[in-house]
Image 1: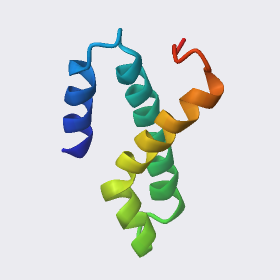
Image 2 (image 1 turned 90 degrees about the vertical axis):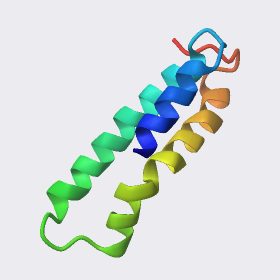
Image 3 (image 1 turned 60 degrees about the vertical axis):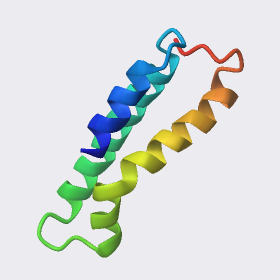
Image 4 (image 1 turned 180 degrees about the horizontal axis):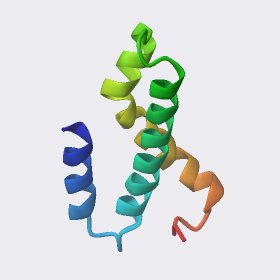
Length: 78
């Protein structure tokens, strides 16, 4: 649900799609990380694993927004 809310809000920002692309990149990274967590410990997840799966997308989006300014100094993504 959190991913859908952030996706809709990022699509509503009129910046030429930059924020939407950043959120899409963060979504791919988050889903990859979640898949690794599930493959690593499918039957006995730790409390961090469960918290990351539930709320980690917000942290990944914020990290991606911060890193984009260092990777793409002009602010344009791809």
